[in-house]
Length: 111
Length: 112
Image (cartoon, rainbow over all chains, first blue to last red; front, side, top):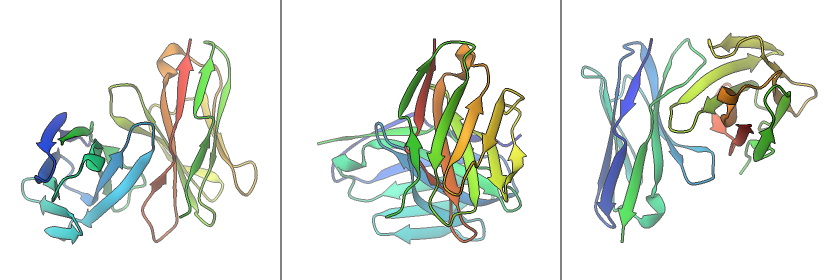
């Protein structure tokens, strides 16, 4: 079945850029997402990208998609302490209904 | 901003008891979902619901689980006879045809 993998942990200093990586196995993935989960809160949709795109930028967030390598990344510019959270990568097939999530990457931002 | 609301935030139940987890999706959304996250594991899809019926379900969603939209605003997940391994965070989500899924803050279910 489909699988989505992420590294468990990332630590950066405030003001630096963060890059969170994700790999997936399903070549029919059409939509790829990044969700953010703060402590005690739900899953907040940050951004998403269609598989026919290579890059999407939204303010401090840049999503890069390498469809050949099935690799997705989320870059957060000028990382702030408020960005500390768990970031989940997820994918969905065009015809499908369900999201397949990675295990989440815990981002810790040090002052 | 509209949001998906889940109640309760935390539910403790004894093994073998029935629980009902409640969700109020965003109004005018038509597609509804339940996901769960066992502590330390991935968020897993359970079921999707559209037009008053289940549209897709995972292997996890066996006969002890059921979903219902009892009125125009609520979407519930019932677990008939809870097991210890049902302890998890349960997330409800909803979307309409033109948006991506919005998730609630989750209900933490603890089975003792």
